[in-house]
Image (cartoon, rainbow, N blue to C red; front, side):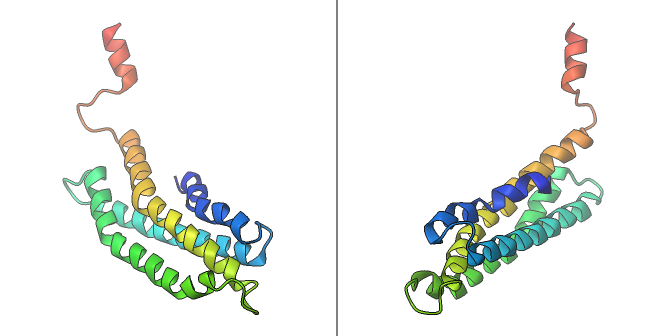
Length: 152
């Protein structure tokens, strides 16, 4: 699940790279690593919390994931907003001496944080619920194969 969603999280960095000197820029590569690390950390926290909540009696995967998303959303959004605010000045001031590395890093990180926030709060929970339902179908629900066999 994480291996399929991590490339989506770094799309912001990939789209920002041509705007600030290409993917070979040290600043862009550093931003890519920063966004990757942050996304993996936040995704693991979300999945771990959903698993904890899912272990409770009468908890469904959807309700556990929804609750975990609600609990972790303020932290994810706060991280993106504060990091973006700190990097806003270097992102705007692109032609000052000494910002040759910091400007591409700032722009790529801000774009990466936008896509990473969307992935962590929307894509990861959706994948988690889909995989949990596939691994543990609800009692009394027939799988597609069972419905086909019953109809034929």
